[in-house]
Length: 323
Ligand code: PEP
Ligand code: MG
Image (cartoon, rainbow, N blue to C red; front, side):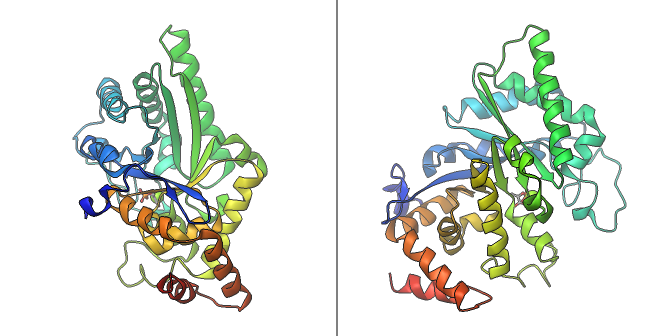
């Protein structure tokens, strides 16, 4: 399959109507980085930092992390890497953390909630990221922001760490871009100020969908029950796209759905211009985008909505079959 799409590697994901979608890859290990070259991704749209914390039996030291992040940046050869700060809790339990006995861990003490309560770990990780990015741009995103105040707090901590590094006389990143992951429906309705504070926003579709439909992504009985192409969910995405456009903030989608060709195409038709996915999905998604008109698909979506359909999978796949 790699070979099948190899000829597309250096071509843009430009649809026949002229719209281009930027395709990024998700990563979490050094071993993922060679795929950046192989897949033709424009960068790493989501670097999950949990694994480095999960594979040890102690909190990694700042030096170790800085060295690792530096290698990640070195191996991305100038392509941007969006580092997501630690998203632990929920399904990702650290061996050296006291197990939390929570009735609903996915909605419990996780991600930025832990970061803001245990600031030492968050600060240490931010210091490591800053030190790894000396002389280069740094992209940081905070996971699971449910309220503007959490983003403001995390942002302030990052700025404090930047000032501290500067005060210590250390060299600095050339540029810093800060973003939030939009993974809870509440954030789609945040004040305008929130979107204006972000240099970029990335939709964590796996979590966003589980909270929108109240359907546990880990529960086999319900995890596939609600379709991403359900018009209610698409309406939520349209709301998010409109909010980001109004604030002129670049928006991406980095959940698993971004790597599913029909979903990816639909997101592009709704207005998303940046998708981040498993490296193996880039070829198939690009192949499909290059064969169709996203503008025409937009019309199919509008027609389906005005007919009052509750799910657009059928008209979209029927349209695709005619292409
Ligand atoms: C998501 O929720 O869609 C996401 C990208 O983050 P994770 O899958 O790591 O929770
Ligand atoms: Mg998530």
